[in-house]
Image (tube, rainbow, N blue to C red; front, side, top):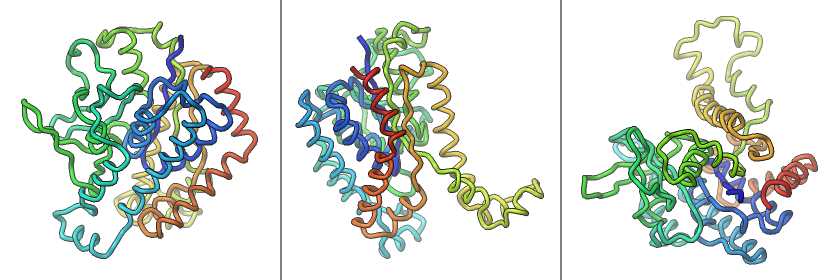
Amino acid sequence: MPTRILSFDGAVAAALQIRLVLRYEQAYPGFLANTDVFAGVSNGALMALYLGQHRTQDHDKNLGVIQDAIDFSNAVIPIFQLRLWKLLRFATGWLPLHGSCTYAKTLAKYLDDTPLSQVSSNVLALSFGVKDWKPHIFTNMEPPSPPSPPSPVYHGDVSIVEAAMASSAAPLALPLNREETPLGDRILVDGSLAATNPTLVAIAHTADWLHGGNGGTPIPEELEQLRVMSLGASFSQQARQRIVDGFVPKCLAFRDLSWGWIQWLPLRPLLLAQMLYQGQIDTVDYECRMLLPLQQYLRVNPAMNQIKSFLGLLLLPERCLIKELDKQADEIWSDPTFRGGVVTWLESAWS
């Protein structure tokens, strides 16, 4: 019996992909009902936790669940929009751009205090520890016995909204997340610092959980059971070229390779950050493809204008960004090659 994992990247990719999930369910009824594990990081964790908590075995109801998840994603957008008073507090150097109060209220509106252990679906959200420099995994698929170090820190006794807060506490944007335990406070930040693409974490943990918590020995039989759909986004070749060129004329871009901070930062302000961000995502994709054959693993990462969407998140009225995300989702799904490839794979792997 296969175990199907649906994994969400974070950032604006999750806002796009949750719109495409609605189309996956429409094109392949039963997609959500057949999903066994919902995994995510950062904004992707919000979507994974929401779907894991609310999905049903009914196709029509699941269409409503996904639409509610889209509304949840839309409700988060205005929290991150820049305002003068936010810039002033950030300019002090002592405070993040956004406070946690409004963010916590928004999460509590769509998620609740249900303990992870009582969520009917298997869920996994990734965070990262500031003090211990370890990945922290929030899941109801805890291993039966404590794993041997070095290992992630598992959290199964917290609420679903606490897991969402911990996985999405982005540095500079939101306050750090504090979890009080008998052994002392745990200080956690956005799980994207550990893995922008959480798919490999989801594969490793789910296979280990299916095996009974073996703590890292080879588990080929459990890997054979997995069917994994990894949801993210990528840059178009044109967008990548603009990031690489920055403010340097193309004819001079690589004439001198002795780059100092001027070449890396003022002249190419996005290059280093995007190499770290997208490079990690693509490396995890490669590792997953080496672990699982094509019939077991599908990476869905359509090209989207992530810079435009990110700037829209900060600067544009929320309705403009929502309209842009809806437009991009429609354009992506209207491509018969993309649509046909996804549906064909789902018909063979998700039944």
